[in-house]
Length: 213
Ligand code: URA
Image (cartoon, rainbow, N blue to C red; front, side, top):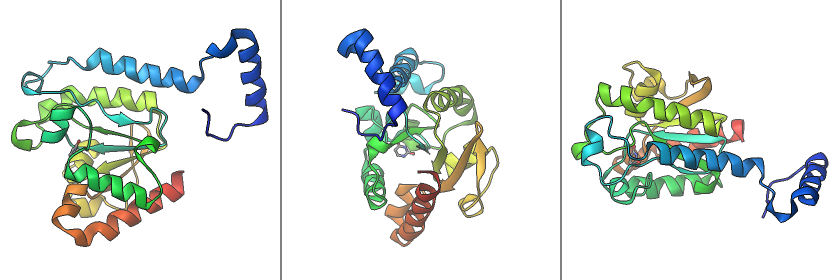
């Protein structure tokens, strides 16, 4: 079912395709989805760094392959390693609630991490792991083509910006990553530790959604 608003010219084109190909027409949207799926299959057995040998699951990223907003976290945690799905632990549940507060769901966004495999005991990503894994993120961005990227937390932010900065100094600025506008805000796990920051992350999400959606 198509739920997006489609202009008349597109409807005429879709009718034409339907006349020619019957009900088996493939929309551009499906093609994009397939490309991302194909890319997942291409890289999901990666063993280019040490993390590949210890993971339970490669955590590619989840959500809408055509999303305008892409969230980027640091690396999978225990629950994500267990399930192969991004942000499904306590921090992920909070992220779902924060998205609901701005009338979005996982189906509206894409979410991935800088690293696709869990570092032991959730330690910070090492420079050689980032260097090995970051090209995967670049390719994901080039396929999804988001309008804006939101880095969740200091580690994801400083990794994408390539500067040792505090969260406070990154938050509120617009950076560029792979030519896409990039914002940095709190990691949901930080909100679990300090609920006073919930208002700030919510206002960041609202401001970004109003500007880009
Ligand atoms: N924290 C992250 O940065 N990424 C996840 O996928 C889960 C928790």
